[in-house]
Image 1 (cartoon, helix red, strand yellow):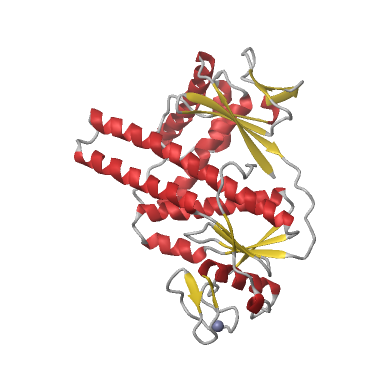
Image 2: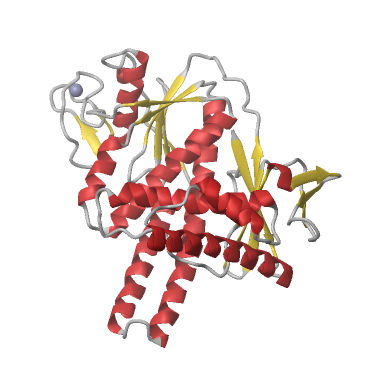
Length: 383
Ligand SMILES: [Zn+2]
């Protein structure tokens, strides 16, 4: 299991040179491949490109050059994949001035709390502070600053064994609703929803302004810059809120002495998104996947298992009598038996029943109403 740590550093001429050197190296690979393809009609192999690049001097570590070549071949491979179905696809052709700089294995040395990133013989190394030796480091540029992203290998703790499972339903209104056989907890998503709605509104507002002015005019570029800036900020807020919710959920799982988290497969939702043209819905789907991946890695860090179970009919079935009915509002009401409960709670209860081997829930009759967990930016600790 890997964890990433990001370090923000200033923009300096040395770092600019380094990124430019990487850009030069990547651009050379692109132009070499294109030239050979044009003149001889075939694509060079990765080994041949590596041999060629070794002969040209770059002020970079040999493995940094290798990973740059790898990056090119990765995008070439995806081009080969795409071109099968789309004959208009183009092979990678961008020759950037700057490029990401990556260090692996021999390019990284660690001593006395300092990480030295080699930039080739005769060049000064990049130095960073760290507690342990990273397995992989990447330097990239973002909004006026350079970032070093350090990836560490982390030992996963032994798996917990308590025999208790917690099922969760990930809904649009509430990001997580959990059920552990007795208790139903609703993690309030108002904060997340408000940010999402504001994000969509800002995006639409600026886009409509951009549509009204001439494309690529000064004003158009200014609006585009503003859009990128605001969206980046709101996305960061969204991510932060999601981190807090998932961290709180995982710590609740540990408190409840659970060993397994059961998640409904979100397959159906993703399929539906393919047909919808609304971009705000896409934001939604993407956020779902992000929330899910956050739960997965945080669960692994805490020694919890994650199990995916088909979500089919879990939101429609009555946990008391098994009658199927599509809920029409936020509350699930079953006509034949009179069972009434929060809609998202029903999904989590049915999912829990599914993995626990019950067809109908044995405790529903005596079940308490769901407990709400409010989003509070100061109470939940991140990480
Ligand atoms: Zn019923």
